[in-house]
Length: 298
Image (cartoon, rainbow, N blue to C red; front, side):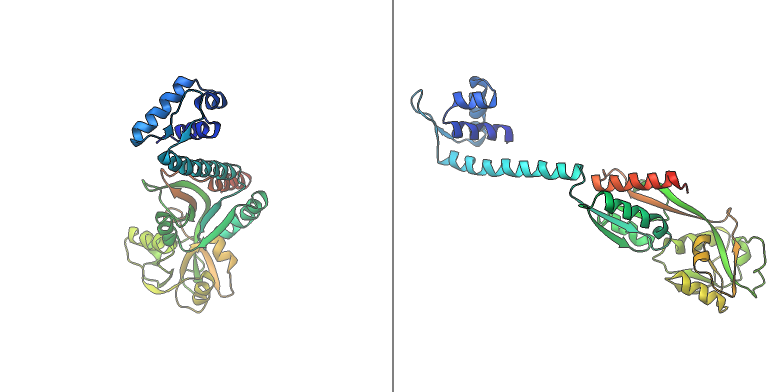
C-alpha cells in the first residue's frame, strides 16, 4: 500500500471532493480518481460515498477506518523523517563504543572529550572489555565500533590506530635482563606471566611462541599489567607487553628488554562489522579519530 495514495485519499476526505483535493496536491482529477480506484481495488472495498455531481464526498465505514489509520501512518512517517534528520545533523542518536582496556585511554580520552563537546546530544555508552569480548559484542550488535588486536577478514573492517614495539619485562637479576634484544625462542625455557584469555594480547603472545616452535611455560595469568609487572619483580617469571604499557607501570627491580619486531609487534585497531553501514554518530567518531591520527601518526 502506497502512503502517497493514502495521503491522496485523506486530502479528498478533508476537501470533500476530488476537485479541491486535486488542486491542493497539484494533481489532475483523472490521475487522482485513478489512484483512488486502484486503492479500492487493492483493498476490495468501497471507500467513498459517491453521490450526485457537485455534492460533498464522504467516506464509507471502511473509508473511515482507512482515514483514521492513514492519519496515524502519515504522522509516524513524519516523525520518522524528523528523527532521521536529527540523527543526520547529530542532534540525536546513540553511540555504543567498545574500548580495549590496554592502550585505548591515551587515544580515546581526548577524542571522547572533543566528541562530547561537538555533539552533546549524542548519548555515548562505553563498553570496556578485552579484545575477544569486543568482537563478540560487535557480532551481537551491543557495540557499533570496537578496539582491539585483530586481523581484518570477511567479518570486520577498520584501521590501525596505534602501533608499539613489544618488550620483555624481566627481573633485574635474570640472566636475560641485560640483553640488547630478545627473541621469543630465547624464552622457551623461561616461565611467562600471560594476560587472561579474554585479552587479545594473550592469544597474540601464545601464538607467537607457537610460531617460534614452542608452547610457553605459563607461570600464571593476570588481568592487570601492574600486577603482572609486580610478579615479575618478585621473580615469578617474565612478561611480554607493549613498551608504552610496561613504561607506564614500571617498578624497581625489573628491566624492559626490547623484543624482536620480527617476532611480535602490538597493533591496536578500530574496527566494525564489514558491510554494515555505520550510523551518523559512529561516522562522526571515526572522523574524529582519523583527525587525531593525522595530527599524531601511529
